[in-house]
Image: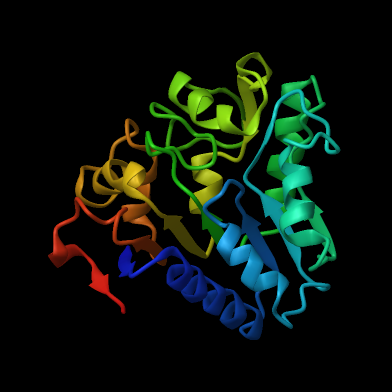
Length: 242
């Protein structure tokens, strides 16, 4: 795990963009994508670039259970708005939030991941250190599943919905084992509200109580932070980039 601290989120996003550019040059064909506010600076850079993904495949981490792809708060809608309308991929995959048969949907998604090994995976991190929607206590051996979101995650997602009762309580999520199968992982985290999760991830023990801590065991993982997210870390454990 390599931890790098930048002056701001935009500088970290530029570093992540450079990794995308290099991955394409090196022949990467499959990119694991994340949603939420954290990757938006990266997606803006990708939209405005001349990078060509028309021969590439994307696989997203998760989707809210019960939301259709055309729902304004679905992750399918988000990805189209943030990236796909400007940078089409040959194939892009997300879980189907309208599939009410979890066994069928999770098996379908696991097969997609097996058929399209991920070269570069982008991650955010929740305030409780979840990755994807793999909440604390999730097995490190997990694959795609229908998960019950914790109260803290539901509260964090409330800002995207008009009413609290509209916030989904479940989601389909790629599992931790599937995330760890990616050849390279880049986790982005910005803001003081992520500082505790980052400390637990980087300096704490590897524990299923801290899902992101498993990244300590990945052979090619980058943690890209702004100063606020890195505020609780020992400076010996990260590289500083101006």
